[in-house]
Image 1 (cartoon, helix red, strand yellow):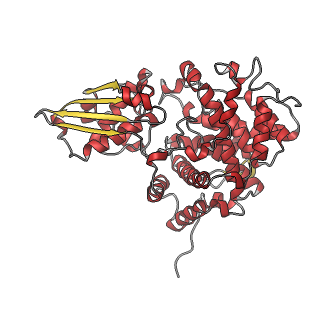
Image 2 (cartoon, helix red, strand yellow; image 1 turned 180 degrees about the horizontal axis):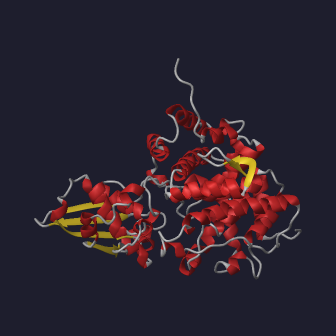
Image 3 (tube, one colour; image 1 turned 90 degrees about the vertical axis):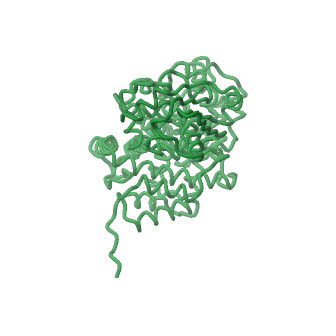
Amino acid sequence: MTEQTAVSVIGEYAAARKYEDLSELTITRARQVTLDFIGAMLGGYQTELGKLAADYAARMLPGGDASIVGDGRRSTTEGAAWANAVMGKFLGMDDSHRTAGHVASQLAPAALALGEKFRLSGRQIVTALAVGYDVMDMVHSAVDAWQRERGLDHKSQAGTLASAATAAVAMGLPAEKITHALALSMDLACGTEQYVWDAGACDTKDLLAGYGARNGLYCAALADFGFRGPPGALDGPYGYFHAFGPGYDKSILDRLDNQALARTGFKPHAGCRHVHSCVDATHELLKQGQPELDAITAIEIDTYHEAITPAFRVNYEPQTVGQAGFSLPVTASVILTRGAWFRDDIESYDKPEARRLRHLVKVGLDEAIQAEHPLKNGCEVRIATADGTQYKGRVEHAKGEPENMLTEAEFENKFRYLVGDLLPEEQIVQLLDCCNRLEQLDDVSELLRLTVPQRMPSPA
């Protein structure tokens, strides 16, 4: 490719990116993303779908390149990345970037699988992740509104391109081959969000993360082998931004050097990120005191437009746990009855008291909150009781946003919650330590080894 095209600009940028270019905050977030998604993978592995993904990768894509997290069996790099992405996405507790969406579920499995295969250093993983986040932010922010209107899914759309960039950088490919990896990945971008309407009746939400991770790896391998993609893959008349977005504007590339990883957020709760500010606002409300549940006569939730549309976000009669995890009326009722918003809490969505409460909910648009979105993702919850008592909770940023970040203790508590009793305590401590010094690791395969339950030596 001799002419300067969008993919060649990105390829040159990615090839030139060095660990030394990264801010300290970017490096910190890379550590946290790695810890956070390893926890999500280990939690997801313990579910029925997680076991199914592990079995598929081990049996249908056998190989010795990379580990299936939590499992002990091995697969090809593509198979391990696919399975690990699927299991890491299942619980809905992966990171959430305000302009790039859910990113780690496509990039972390690809980077870690390659890290294990090629015995990469922590610095190489950090750099590959940082480049992938920059590509994801650039691509997704340009097509988000257009794709959301048409029901396309960002994880396997922009996520495939970002995964290709991460994989190509992790493999140490030169600019020309990174360019071809990106160009090839355009034709594997795929996926719709029909799963939000059919949540609980399909596995697609999680499989799409696997597609993004696997397809990006596949395209990097193709490019490394010598295959070429179209120079106009992004900016051409039939390229990505035309086919999957509103068209190409050269200013899109201005977002590329944006340290996007430094601006990612994390999910302290399960379910859709757009309900999390409601979770937090309801918790703020409860600091005033716990209203008697049978005395509650009205619940009002006001937030930003994207959190209340389409209709599945204001679903008073969800038929599955998957549908419940997107619903604001369910969110408030579960927090009031359970006090938390994890998978097992969401499963209580149709208990009699929660069902009664959700039918008292009225959802509306808060113009002040909407004016600040997406820089803020606030919510206000108001409750009235039969004796006239009023309760109100309001947040400007959901917990885990850059302005309201989790503490190190909260990251560790989340990790331990997700891991449960799968790993022995000594191994959990070792994993925490490895992630906290990620950039110091000479070989990240040490991390992957620690994700598989081991028999620890008994104390003398």
